[in-house]
Image 1: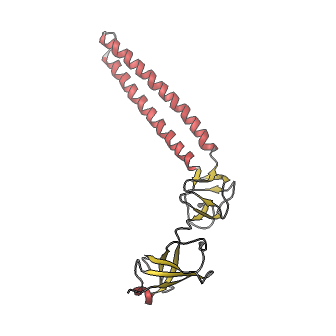
Image 2: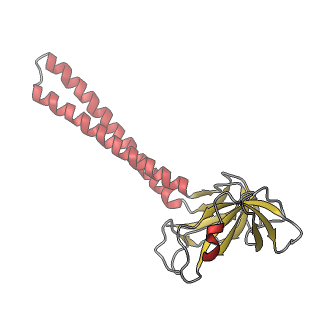
Image 3: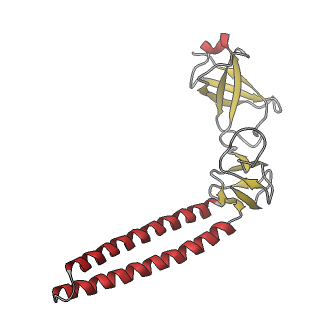
Length: 224
């Protein structure tokens, strides 16, 4: 979970792939990183000490001053110290990953459709269902160059529609404009209540007149 610290976009803004759009509060993870960095430094110091003692005992063993048992013990101490360093390094890498997750970037070039959170709002990366509780999504955005029309086709007409079938798309807001399209997807399951199957038509070369959530009329072009 985290708290929204900053939102750098508003509805209608254009964003680019990788642009920072939201920052989450990272104070806790920064504190944990500093703590873990201190533990790593201590673990590395213990490893260095164990290595020096092991080397010293190995020399004394050659001179018959120390026993083989003591040399073996210090070699085990070195192995244990190495494992401790590796463990803390893994914990530090995990915390750095959490810190990176507090920086939310746009995954595409697109337009902000809606801000779904406000500053100081609690958010979580996991949804537990229902409409109450912490928010899961932060913003809604769309790629204006990648638009589809969703259509519910009657079961009686489903056999007439096939993938890659050419279409003509006319937005209700601009009936004089006609765009080329094609059937990109047919839902794997029909709606029993409606008696329909959802079809998605990909619009070819959309322009600035087309925006998400516009209603449109689709004419399916039959086989030649």
